Structures are given as structure tokens and as C-alpha cells.
Amino acid sequence: MPLITLTSDLGLKDHYAASIKGAILSRTPGAVLVDISHNVSNYNIVQAAYIFKHCWHNFPPGALHLISVNDLGAASRRFLLLAHKTHFFVAPDNGLLPLIHDAANLDCYELPWPEGHPFPIQEVFASVAARLFSGEAPESLGPNAGQIRQRLILQPVINKSQIRGTVIYIDHYDNVIVNVSRDLFEAVGKDRPFALFFKRHDPITELSSAYADRPIGEPLCLFNSAGMLEIAIHMGKAASLLGLKIDDTIQIDFKDL
Image (cartoon, rainbow, N blue to C red; front, top):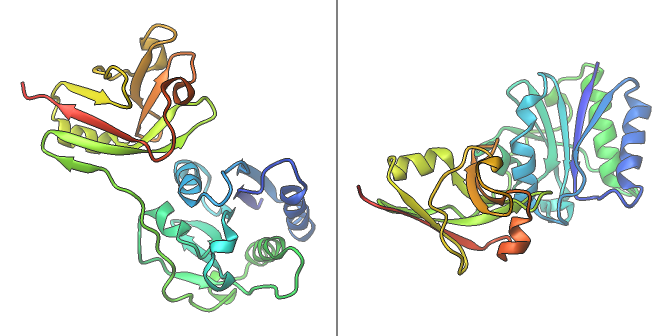
């Protein structure tokens, strides 16, 4: 049974996402469609990469992942098809695929662009799904894309006793996700005491394993299910109450024992 996921910045207020699904089902009857998210902030490629990269691997082999975010930023209106780790990925050539897979050299195919179509994304997605699930090989859907667009994102700044990170995502619960992974934290920290500074608030000096480790209303930090550092408030809205927003800087100082 064909399994197709959809991720976009199209939102749910309008008919766009539903139109795409209808076109796919008309040409690939019996397909199972799973919405990862249609509420990616408009044109926000970094946010889309964060949401998508931490869930696609939970789907079974053979899944087709369709991503439509910041299509206007695609070089020459190109959409790419990537076959990778028994999955298929379709996304605009705007740097999204390299961000998702943390790789610069991806062997992609360039999909035909439907000139004159009133809703090009719909035609691209419906066509590639129908052709792949009818048994066509990925390389038959278009020529090799050659060099694809890359996108740089901010990386943490580190030294032997400090990490300076950046807020990269704020989730539905207003939890604040920082671009500091558990692996990086442990490599720099080496089990030393730490203080996490942000804005003008008192630092957080303890790593929690669950939100309920702290009393209701108190700030905390933990590593979320994606393995990224998260600042939260137990039963509260951390971003709003702590004044944190995307691109804000946080600092972690480690103390020698």
C-alpha cells in the first residue's frame, strides 16, 4: 500500500493542502496520506528541516515524502527527487534536502516542471507519486540534477568551557528548542556542573529528564525526543513567559570541578 507523507507551509485555513491530497488520491488510488505538518511558518526552511528530519525515519521503507516549503526560493523552479535509505523525498531546490540529511552531496533527479499549470506543486506531487508507485525507477523520472542548492545555518560556538547556541524552533507548547545536541553538550561538558544563561533570567543549573521533575511553573532544561536541548516551563509557556524567540542566543558555561 503506497504511503505518502506531506509537509508544507500551506496552512490548513485554505484548500491548498486538500487539493494536493485529492490530486494524489485520484492518480494513486489506495494511497495512505499522512500529514507531518502544514503549519510550518511561511517560507521557513530551517523550521521545516527541524520538523521533518526528526520524524521521517519512523516511517516504513518505501515511503514517499513530499515537502513544499518556500517554493519561491527554489532555483529555476526546480523540484528534486532523492532516493535515500529506502525512502523517497521530493522537495524544492532551495537547500532543504541538504539540511534534512546533513549532507552536501546528494544524488538527486530533477523533476519536470509543469509549465502553465495553475498549481504546479499539485501536479509535481501527484505525478511523481503515480509514477513511482506504478513501478517506475527514480532515474526514469528526470535527469540527474547535478549541483543542488546549499543552505548554511548557524552552528553553536564552542570552547573548552562554553557553548553558545541559538533558538531554532518553538513548538506547539511554547517550548524553546536550541541548536545544541546532547552529544555536543556531553562532549564539551564532560559531566561538569553547568549554568544555562538566557536573557536576564536566573540561570538553569540542573538538567531534567522530564517536565515533571520541576514544580509547576518553574523553568527547566532537558533534551527532547530529538536529542536537542530544550528550555521549558512545567505546565507553562516558556517562549512567551521567558521572552525567548527564534534566533535568540543562549549560553552554557561549564565549571571545572
